[in-house]
Image (tube, rainbow, N blue to C red; front, side, top):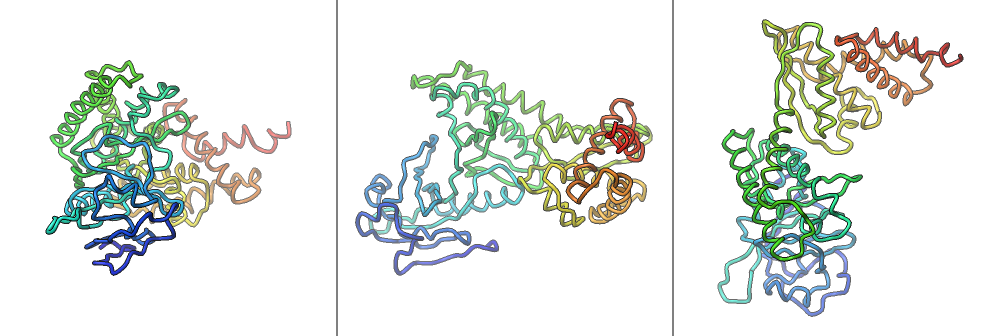
Length: 432
């Protein structure tokens, strides 16, 4: 059992968490045999387990009507206080397996729905009925199934962006060693984000998490994606509800093409000639722009130069702030922390190459704070008023260094960037 979870056996009475929005309409049995739920979750014991799903809306005021995608399983939405949960009815073994898989994807920072727990309950009133399982996930607030975007007016502009969102999701999963097994639009939820779309895996029933994926596993996922997307769009068009002009038989292939381009960009290695270390930051920036965080930089010495290898990951909103604070004690904003951590990882790669052995990130962070951050902010002290100012100006210098290096097609160095920055934006410059 994972930390922060609890298990329970056959309950003696219904518990629940707070009253139902409209109250329970009539007493129900609570034949829950086993449950594994995360701490802080409701116990879900007041739901009408043991009754056919079609009767749930009349038996419990917790059941909500929400837009959902097509699923081979029955899925209902229930509310507890201000939280909404999706209850997917399946077998007990499948619910336990999918719950464990979703926990693994969450640990790796992947864009998937958050698993809350699973239950085993008697599925019908028949004597000797086999227990059914229920996977419970937290509803992704504001998310839309793909059918909504293809039916609703005003959402047409998102249809092409859906292709990039699907490609990006699959790349992220594959980089983390997650084989989807049933990649489809119906098994994905989409979240609008400042005019763009973010895609989230919502069904992990067939998914597997490995240290890494083979080429065959990746290719199999792409084949499944192409076939499923074609079938889904043909079905949607046949219903007469689609507002899309996307070709059902080309759309899957277009997603796969976007996937291939993104995969090559994220995973390619390149050889840096002596003096080309500025290109490390250029490469990191291009990946940041695609939505990826670089978690590790490796420079492998070769006869013709150094081979650059980058390992990428997907992170939470405040991931970089927390990591930088843990490594250096600095409290800065998220984007500032990302720039500083990129520099620390670059420094770690250089130290590892020079020493011909792996250097812990904490060692590189200690060296970075003393040799780069402290020295640089001391030199820039005429421009700095407080700690927040120090972080902002230091990051501006990093941006300036990258700009100068790109112009010169060589690494101008941090010291050179600092002096040029002072010459352009120092106190005398500001007075004039």
